[in-house]
Length: 259
Image 1 (cartoon, rainbow, N blue to C red):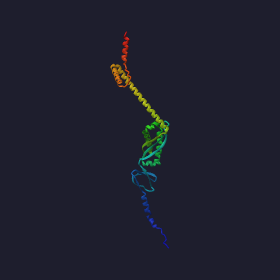
Image 2: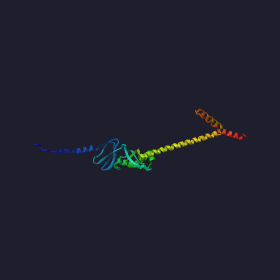
Image 3: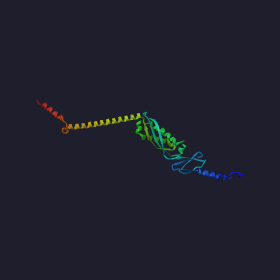
């Protein structure tokens, strides 16, 4: 007959030591340089610890890790109606980070989700206050407005919005064609204005030249001789000699005096 089994009651003598060892091993936490630990004692906030080795008393204290690195959030495309009733789709990229670990854990349930949802609604609100031409030409201003509003509203959560950048402004094909026609019409308008300004300046210069020639008859003669030299250089079968008006007037005056 085998010997009867006897329970080793002597191991209970090591139980307190095992319990102490378990608590000691579970009391240490290692936080990286970019991490902080928000420690609660019996459910109440106690302090922020880290980085390095952090001691947390089991069953009495609880710790929540917080990452302090800058996060990048790609705001999904948002359908927006501009102030001049144009439908566009815009998306952006958001850069933010935690600057107060206590607030980001206590003041909001999920600070990442809250920041992303707030970014979407703010982007629609700000872009909708601008006309289409302003969206296309003043992106920096829109970026600054969205960043400022988000930074003000997330300050209570311990979040710092560093930057907001619009990535794309998508238009439908009809609107793209309309913008192309508008740009072409604008180029034609500028070309006509430049041509008219050139005609005006040329007319002013011709008027000045005419006044000078009228005051100096010898200048008119030089002009006449220059014109003849230009005609002589051309290979033309027919040459028309221009006669100055003052010569015709003199001939007419002479014939009128003859008997």
